[in-house]
Amino acid sequence: MTTSPAPTAPGSPSTGRPRVVIVGSGFGGLFAAKALRNADVDVTVIGKTSHHLFQPLLYQVATGILSEGEIAPATREVLRHQKNARVVLGEVVDIDVDARTVTSTILGRTTVHPYDELVVAAGAGQSYFGNDRFAEFAPGMKSVDDALELRGRIFGAFELAELATDPAEVDRLMTFVVVGAGPTGVEMAGQIAELAHRTLRRDFRNIDPQRARIILLDGAPQVLPPFGPKLGEKARRHLNEIGVEVQLGALVTDLDADGLTVKDSDGQLRRISAATKVWAAGVQASPLGRLLGDATGAEVDRAGRISVQPDLTLPGHPEIHVVGDMANHPDKLPGVAQVAIQGGRYAADAIKRRVTGRGPKPPFKYHDKGNMATISRFSAVADIKNMKFEGFIAWVIWLVVHLFYIIGFKSRVTTVLHWMVSFLGRGRSQRVATQQQVYGRLALEKLGEGFATSKTGGPKDHPQTPDDVNPEQQHDLVGRRTA
Image (cartoon, rainbow, N blue to C red):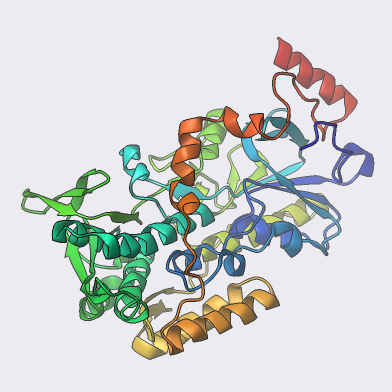
């Protein structure tokens, strides 16, 4: 990595155009950037990763159906033809609402980005409900790293079971527990069952993968609560038919490498011995929500979401737009991709109106396009505008909708090919699993934050001059750092 100053970027004061900074390259941020394609503004997209993640299909990466490339195209590639947009890699660590600057950092390099309009779409991470220690043994389902780690854990469990001689150890290795019976948990449990009962059933000699035990746990009284009791019950019955044990009213009270402790609705505690645990319960908004709340006085709820005005802006700050999972809208919107997509487009339109002097838009109204979740091959449930579908018809609807929203023609083609391999045949296109995938996250956490910077030749002790500010702002910022 170079430590030399970056060149003056689009969006600097010399262009004379309004500067729009977008925090996050997920659905909200990316669709906001694309909606500003023909606007007379300069757009800077700041992302923690270099890719846009199609999160609804992350479980298929974890279970070997798709590669990460199918669902995570490079953000630069997506926006390469948009001349008024640039992409910056970095984690946003500060937003100065008075100076109107965003500070990001990556491997020791700090960059300050001035803005005239700000779109904050940093999304949400996994919540362990105050039990963050669970993350060591039960990865979530929020990133490509999570999916690759889980792929390694799932396929690795079968490999280790093939070598084990103790029947109790074989049972532990072949028990898979998914915590959370929402769409992600249901889809994950269903695909692990498909993997064990179809894909791997003839691949081993000492074990029978069909004897694998797949458990879906949730403290709620039904599966898929947003879908209503009718579809939830149908989903539960189908999960049971394909070999998934659904245990409701069950709260996880402890979790370690060997298994987990569960408290049932009657108060009884029991132990489940399991090597592989998947955490698909609960989300926590980006810490930027609380940072913005402290800076603007806006209320922040327990999940870290910041209360926004009906037009998705913050009180007293019409230039700050918050969209997606971070926003606590008065209409109490669900945390789904469509809310982020529609919110990003709405914010972009509001920005175009502001910079051209037109009147404000009406309050944001979410158009609910329904919920859907796959259960297994050729089976899904869907709730679309009060019409409920199940089975093969729902699965076809799910297929079409997800293909439509996958970004890039190449990704659509390769995704269809991999789906054909998995759904029409018994194979999985992506079964590579390495020790680095399984243990890399834990090793990096133990090495600490300074490890990556020390191995890149990047900035260490000396401060960097912000790249995106004019000379007067540079002087003020350096003064604040050394004060």
